[in-house]
Image (cartoon, rainbow, N blue to C red; front, side, top):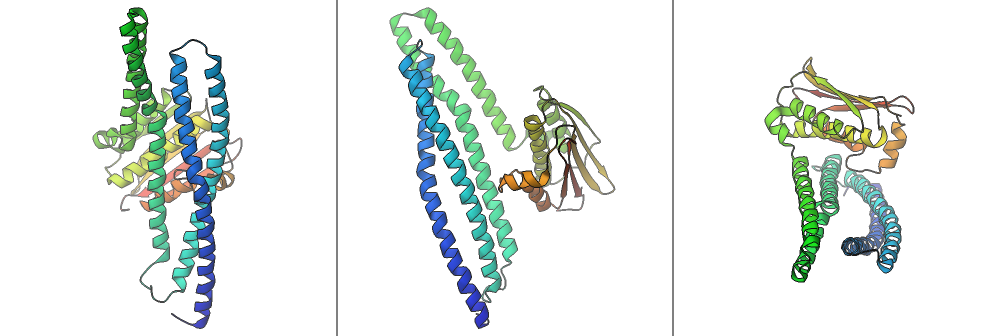
Length: 331
């Protein structure tokens, strides 16, 4: 176990780990019930709003929905705060465990930084699953619930002989079903964009630009030469970086012009996304991201995993630029 000094240092770190895990347990014990309550309130609001859509103005329903939304907003803030605390403590625990591993002689074969990277990848996957679950709940699941309730109401209208009301409701349900189908297809495409398989990265980037530009929120100028086929991991990471950059532009640089450029030059693939939006302070934004899977720091870490280098240049009032350089022999 090494020298007595290593033993003393290890004992200190172990005591810190015990305290940190106790705090994390306390946070999770509050986070679990709060998350459950938030989901239940969301379901109740959905049911009440569906009932309201099938009935004329109802003061009692309106008051119940308003009160529940106030409670929902308060819970959302609480859950967000607790989630941030849990992520920060988990990160601190991993860092402390790395320090402990360095001190222990009985695990010389374990590279603590490699273990930390693996833990980060696992956490990233869990964050992505959570994001996808939220999208399904907020999108297609809501529409399906609306359709189910609408069909039950349709049976009642048919039994009452109210054909005009029934036809109107069925038309609404048809439109809702089409919307749900579109969302499901978009959801599936986001998991692994079909264009990556059929058109390669350059074709997928052009298609992404057209789709985002069609929203009218930003203007996109996409140009680039044909790219060589990369391995699937490299292509999906570069695609996701471009996708996140464009989504950020839609959110924070509306009406801006975005230049998306890509090329294979001098033995490397270069991806450049530049906009003339309001810009930002990268250090401030990185500090606020709190380890989120596709924050600026996450984008840079993902790029490094495939052997690429990502740099961000921006300042308030000066637009922003994201540059990714991938050597063709990487991976």
